[in-house]
Image 1 (cartoon, rainbow, N blue to C red):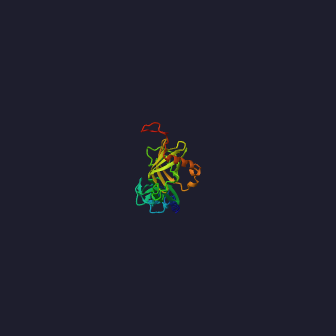
Image 2 (cartoon, one colour):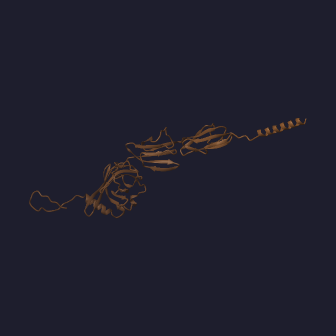
Image 3 (tube, helix red, strand yellow):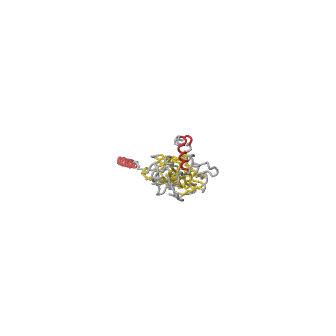
Length: 350
């Protein structure tokens, strides 16, 4: 009987030991989560190895000009998702280029052509990063004046034609065309449409204007003033030139300087290839001494000839100018006596 009890005790001990071994800690399964992003954005984590059933938060962030379009590798759709790791997974955040609208308005008569010069396009909606070249072509009796770019409720003018527009947001651009004007009004010969102060448009650094040719010499002109009394003033970076001008034709003006003492007028230059509208003057200027340049100018709306301190009528030199002009235009009368009885004689006086 004692042997039976001992054997039962041994078996009970062995069973208890076996039971203790079966209750050891179970190692959880691990899985790999890989997270990537397409062109145009980034993700908050690249992933890694995680225990089974671990939840990982992933956020997709688009770059400027791109939009988040969805995930590959999961059925979740939000920009920020929580993924429970239950197996090895590869998840990709996808991004597409934003589309912007380019609205073109027109003032006056002309056409605006649109050309994408670095990507494909569709209708007037362009992908972000596209560069659109706008070319303004006025009708025959109009001139292109400027572009007005409106974005973020701010207006900016540009005179370049063609104009390259980078589509980094939706934009509205207005092309303005102005009707051509004759230099002298055909219905009123006293109305000189060139009168006013004209401010020369400056070239951008490193840019050669398309209207300038290889012949051009930089005249460094800032302003040109044409007055109703036919006086002019040219203001350069280094000097001021004054004189009288004469409208020779619909496209040319002569520039003279009058010398009272010598009773003569000397031509010092020409404005040619003139194009004129209410607010715009285009011309080629040639001055003796090497200046030869194609220029564009804008009318100064604040200019008043009656208060111009450089105008002859306001400086007391008007009488002298008038006198010199009269002397230059009066006929020459020579009074002398014959010195012999020859029938044919030539008399020359300085």
